[in-house]
Image 1 (tube, helix red, strand yellow):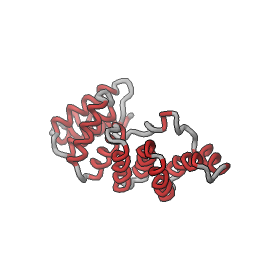
Image 2 (cartoon, one colour):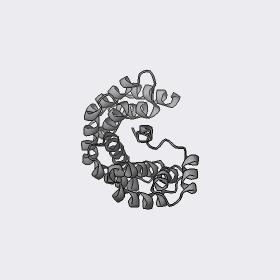
Image 3 (spheres, helix red, strand yellow):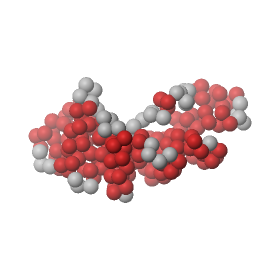
Image 4 (tube, one colour):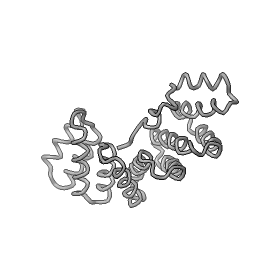
Length: 200
């Protein structure tokens, strides 16, 4: 499952789209204004401008380059541009190898696109190794395993994801599990999970 907002929660870039644009407008030529402008561009769907800005900021601030590219990848995913999202996440991983949320999101994007599934599998496994108690990461692992036709392993990962969210069920995870049950020929269980997913 795609993980939203992880980088925004670090406290470095919590500004709203409005306040971010306002700060940038007050001092449009400062470096800090440019850094603040990037999430505003992404939040408002101005992705071409966001890409240009990220490309200019990344070489100047290599320690934050993963964040710039990851944020852009989030924006592309939200817009349904999977190829562009994958490219942005690849740049983020190159800037900060081993970043679990980025690995998860790239694995999920590759799974959605049906391309390079072996790489998606590697990324999903590494992401889960970093945080095995993340329901979202277990879901991504199960989702990619299902795409590869490894249905029993997919069921195990997705069962684990559902267990981790027992107090706050997630419709995407439940639907993924329902799909796997259906492919395994467990029609009654599949109907139950798909109906539960529709209710959450």
